[in-house]
Image 1 (cartoon, helix red, strand yellow):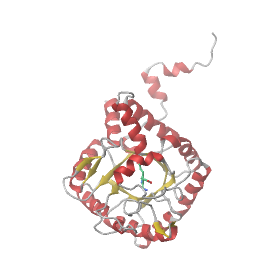
Image 2: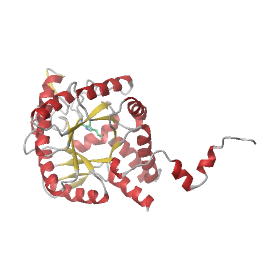
Image 3: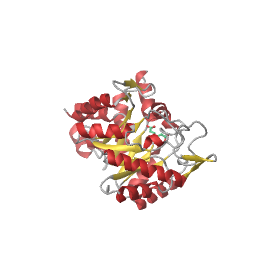
Image 4: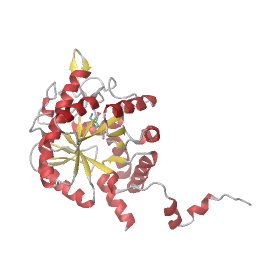
Length: 326
Ligand code: PBG
């Protein structure tokens, strides 16, 4: 055969494959989520997310020292409060669980970059991400609360606030409150295109945040839509988001790609709890090779255009990458 083009030439040895590889995962790409609970000496595994735990602050500090030494540079914190009410008021208390954790971590590990998830659903007794009046989730009332939570996180030492509630106008509200209180340097990573996804199932067990009634379809996005994702991202950027996010990741690579091509803000993707649980379960049964499938999935998320990957595998992925490089 006379073939001028032979793509296999560039696959013929390890060195040439390395030379033409387009996407390379770095330890600095990852953010790991952590669930912090009140109490002492608690480290309880979350059943639908093996290898992830509810940590009390003392145990979380030990864990964060371990992962920092590995090379993890950034974490996102989720709090499970002692008590819930209809307003979610434990979310903005000075001595709330996330606020206490932030102060403790900053004191022991000042280098670690601390992001906080900002939402009401772990703190409300009804499990919704907003304030309910007459059976409806009221947007603008909720914004007031979100502003208070953001300020309390900033005061406790958060480096970045990540609103995940999907209320309209939250980024503008949070930016205004932070700036009015001289926290101009605290960044906002907006969960911009956050879909109403069944892939959050294991997280809701971990965060005790499943809605008591109904679902989140009046605020989170319809999985059938992609143009709407771009509108959401545009709004968040106009309101002052520093980083935009697509969530979940693996079933939404097309959205990640479009966002990466269209906007020049740093783009994050959240490799969510259900994506984690699926691969873990198959690996435990011996049906998939966990390391290979995970590194392939994370590479796909980055190849689609996400620079920042929030993943429950963050520390494990860093370990694997280091092994492979050694
Ligand atoms: C809070 C929040 C959720 C997740 C992150 N922040 C759950 C939800 O919206 O119900 C999901 C994360 C995951 O599944 O890993 N609103």
